[in-house]
Image 1 (cartoon, rainbow, N blue to C red):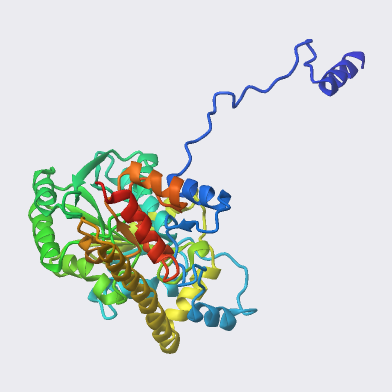
Image 2 (spheres, rainbow, N blue to C red; image 1 turned 45 degrees about the vertical axis):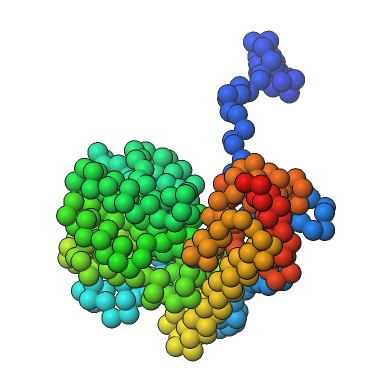
Length: 424
């Protein structure tokens, strides 16, 4: 009894029953993680009290007043499903209806692959989750493979395949001298990669450069992939958001399908429906036949099971409601075109403002590039000046989120860019 009381008193005092103070040292070796460069930009912007401040770092759509947008088709879909959904689990593979509608966007409304059930597909936690599921699938079933990733790319691509323990290689993509595609070097890398290599490709609106291959260049890339038996995994985060036309933005994928490739594809509704916080996406893998598709889907679900078990239901209901209703889908197509057109218009206005200021530099790349981001060509030092002198915030690689450019700030932004570049 006495010894039991001693142990009890020792615990109360923070000491072990052996007279040694109990101090947890489990996590002493943990260092603070490096800040995400994009989130760091937003934090700095929010902390700035200057009324002139401009944030062109965030990768989320804003209207011409700089405000977040909820699409009307989303509001109407929410109205229709309000109070009618239960809170039960979705299957591990997610909403069957949402997945079916999503596949039509990527593979075509009347795709023979959908009809023949050759596509293994599951709902994913937006595009990020779709990429991570595929990376884990690649590691599990092609353990000796590696992934070729373009230079540059969305920074999280490297994190995803690294944490899935898939070795990474890079291939040439962007040519700084022209602010465009380094097509010759890209093709050399494709040709020189070992046969049967995995390549990560941006289907449209390449992040961060906004530089996409032309249709003819995509055909050449597809031809060479076929010759080398490479596997193409498309990350399609901006379908409809790039050109305003989802069919046009899926053209690269359709070219590969026409050439007989078995591809993988990550899709997201964060940008093109503004469902950033709902985390709605899809991972699909085109297989040889229905039997193989069933097996692959079962394994994708098996990977998801210990990761998050079941995907969320609300966002999937919004997407399936919009895409399965002709009226709402028509409204969505109109709204996504409106978002794309506003960004395209801001590209034109920014370039015109820079040229009117008498800039000695060429700014053609602003309008040649497409999608949410403009790879401006600004150096890290010039970006620092924009922040310190003009309170303009962007990532230090010079990536401008065109969604943050408005008719109210485009003149100020152009003038600031001109000031930091006129002596370059």
